[in-house]
Image (cartoon, rainbow, N blue to C red; front, top):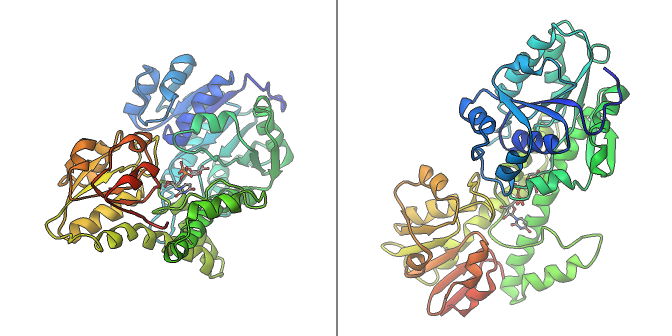
Length: 425
Ligand code: UDX
């Protein structure tokens, strides 16, 4: 293989058609690369090959899928001619941050199995979020079990993604930077060449540093949120508006205004998990990461504040409580580690009945809470009290007059309520 791939015409295989894999595959196809998507889930394969609604909700993904040529298959041999093989399988983690690496191991074994027949050079690039050292200590040994040698027969990279749900296509096409952890220069050169058309700064480093950049980046975003929530809790005691404080802080370019929106805390499939992975990795390395652990602890406590505030105003036992927002953030149907899960459970434990509304996430939430009512915004507003848990745009136009509202996401219009409390303002 020529080590300088054409920036708009490489053969790329993407293993795993989940959130990261699908967005990565479709965007690389949009950049002109020949992409084959490999997954074990036939439904996902059919959806992609028939240009049907992708198996995940992501703004603009269905349209983009309709515009590009991309093939999906469960047959790993389809990647025999690929120059670059991205591993984008899911790496969930348990509550202690131990990664379920089964999918990663399985995919890597299948790659090694297929490519042991291959004579020409190729690069395997890990894009899944992994613990520090996993590419060197887990992925490479499995690939080399094929008898091939890293460095000579194949190259290895670790190139994390920083995609936000709801803005993933924009984030892929307009990255603030591209991180390329490389086994050697040859591996890195090849991965660089297919990103040239994105005109973004590229940081080349080694494999485990790239892994840590991903984890530390998400941990820092979570730190900003837990920090502003702690400041918010203090401000609320002192009658100071946290959002004014955040505006003043954010004007300092050493701090920046992003990720300073105080509220009920962070959720989603990444921030909570990546902190757990980092904490677990640190402990395995013999370091007690007290600060990082505290970020998660505060985040869990923060989610329960709306229930505590509500109890100041009504008796929960036998009350009907309305919920506005179930998704972990607006723009997605994803409820993974959504703060609404903790809050709804706490309300049910207190003997309240819950009526909830969300424009996209009801089907997912119903799988966890089949016993609560899923209603319209009007019906939520007719409950004894209302909790706002996700800042969907439509909530900025509702009529809150005469209501009891605990606001977890700073919906200014809700201040017109008879009783209004911000969770930390
Ligand atoms: C995050 C990272 O942003 C992304 O770079 C990475 O690749 C994956 O994880 P995502 O999980 O989509 O992306 O969510 P994000 O937009 O980061 O929000 C995470 C959580 O933090 C949400 O629950 C959101 O409501 C909360 N949040 C965000 C705040 O509470 N305050 C803020 O100021 C920003």
